[in-house]
Image 1 (cartoon, rainbow, N blue to C red):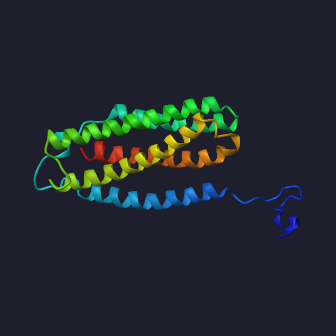
Image 2 (image 1 turned 180 degrees about the vertical axis):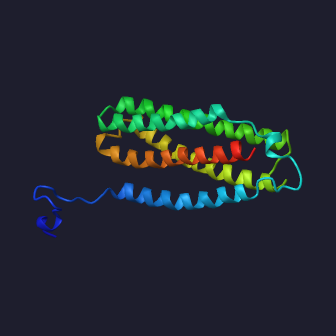
Image 3 (image 1 turned 120 degrees about the vertical axis):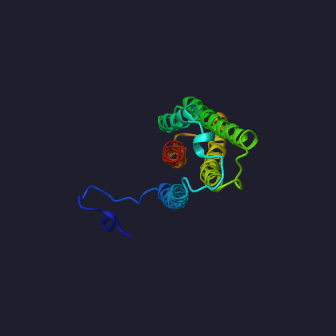
Length: 198
């Protein structure tokens, strides 16, 4: 295709294809949104329909601290991308480490919550409709967080080794889009499960 065919509108402006990574991640996020919508709607539909206890108000506590940690990790991963775009590899590693730490605290908090619910309150996925929908929705989100943490840990590993350079900033940005999605989904899950559902 000639350069003239690629030009759009202005004679000096050449149209370029959008990043394949960003387009691919956007498509993945759209598909994941559809899955989460199904789980959220199911949770909302079954609120208050359990025939036996325990009920959400009896066992759920607001995970404020872990929520703050997870949402803060969106800022740190953004800072990591910005640092890499400016060729500040050391700063990028520092922000990636902070992101992994904050995400790890969130997962540890979720694990502790589940341990408490199962062993102290006897709430399992088979206990009642609340247990089934709770573990399905929160577990789906936690799985996405774990996947994100694995990928971020790999990025941190390569960053610490000095193998991640400014030219890799777009790849890190693609990963950060996934992490922002995971954080955004948690806002919905938090509101539905811990605010509306109680």
